[in-house]
Image (cartoon, rainbow, N blue to C red; front, side, top):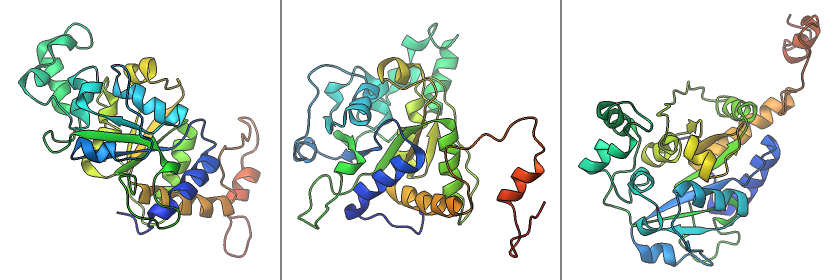
Amino acid sequence: MPSNVATPQDFQRVAGELERSLKLRSLPFAMRLCETVEQMQAVPRIRRPQAIHTLDQLVAQAARLGWTVGVTAEDLVGDQCRAVVGLGGQDAPWYEAKAMVGVWYATPHDAAQHQAAMHVVPAGKYRALVVGPLSKWGRADGAASSALDEPDIALFYATPGAMMYFINGLQWLGYKRFDWSVVGESACADSWGRALKTREPSLSIPCFAERRYGGVEDDEMLMALPVAFIAKALTGMQALAKNGLRYPFAQYGIQQDVRAGMAVSYSNAAGKPAL
């Protein structure tokens, strides 16, 4: 875990700074798994779905509408959505995925291989999920604890350029190479499924279902990770900004002599151009 700590009192600030730094078009949001339905129902002003949805739709209600939504297995259209967050599936029929054969995969073997490759929260422990804007989590005044004290993970949609800048911020101090998976369809397993399971930063290319049903735009990617990593990345991005490296990236020109532009970014301790 990163050394930077984001306490429940910091979540609104962290969400606001992330929006400003990356020029986000939707709200950073967060998830928390609940071991009982009663824990989910105790969240103040929680909304409950009035129809059957994909989890992508309910995520979009948090990110695009600013709603805090409580989800149980019965609210979701099928076991593919339930399995990723540990609310169902993960039995023999789910691993066979016969409904995907001839739709997404050519053979039963291909479909089964896909299911086995997905990152999922183990089923059995959790009964509900809360999804809501990150700015609504935490306690601004140190008040008594509630079910919205701290999420398991935070998530945000951003363009590829913004995602790279965020990753640069994560790597500013305590560098680490990131290796992420692409499971294909059901890419929520690469984002919130992986992050909920491993509690590590997890980047995904949203899939057909997320874009068709979850309102994800064509140029958006999804990052999922514990909030402390966002605090770490913000510190890194602030350092990069002091060096003149800011998002959005200013275009330099594909036919210009590059030396002047490079010299702005790379200089030695005496302030003389390094290139």
